[in-house]
Amino acid sequence: MADVRTHSHQVQVHPLRQHEGGIKVVYPQSGPSSTQVLAVVAGVPVGGTLLTLAGLTLAGSVIGLMLAFPLLLIFSPVIVPAAFVIGLAMTGFMVSGAIGLTGLSSMSWVLNYIRRAREHMPEELEEAKQRLADMAEYVGQRTKDAGQTIEDKAHDVRESKTYDVRDRDTKAHTARPDRDTKTTHEVRVAST
Image 1 (spheres, helix red, strand yellow):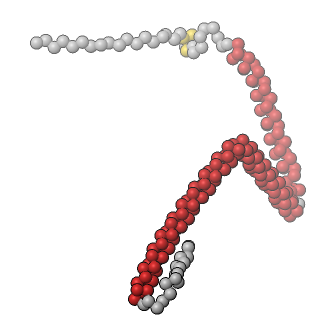
Image 2 (cartoon, one colour):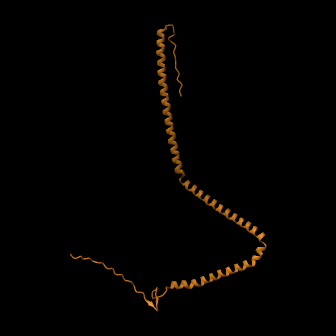
Image 3 (spheres, rainbow, N blue to C red):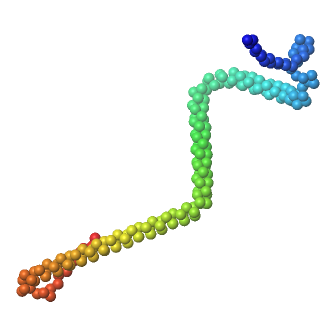
């Protein structure tokens, strides 16, 4: 049997880049766009001017420091504490400003919170009133039921004690006829 295998071939097409004088051309043949030219024309003078100013400022600072160094060395016992005090004062002002800003932002947050709470306050207040009224009604009903239960139990106890006393008295009268039969005994039950 013959082994037949098919191989797939991939073909890649690469665009040819043109070389002019040994230099590979990256940009198309048309040249840079007008916005690129405008950016270079405006950027070179501005960048050069700023770089020149930075160099002049650095040179002036170095020359000023070289001229002031002998004076700083002579007056250092006075200048160092003065710089320290000025630094502390500036730190105090910055901390005071930061604390004030924090206080203002927290007060602003609280006021916004109160404003938002006022919008929802009537609804929540009505809901709380309704829950309180429901709870009062429930407690009132439970108290009324408990009172009725106590009253019923007291009445039952009174009835059973009254019968017990009458039964005892009737048995006692039959045993001793000399007692007065018209005497009535009452039992009082203390309610709790």
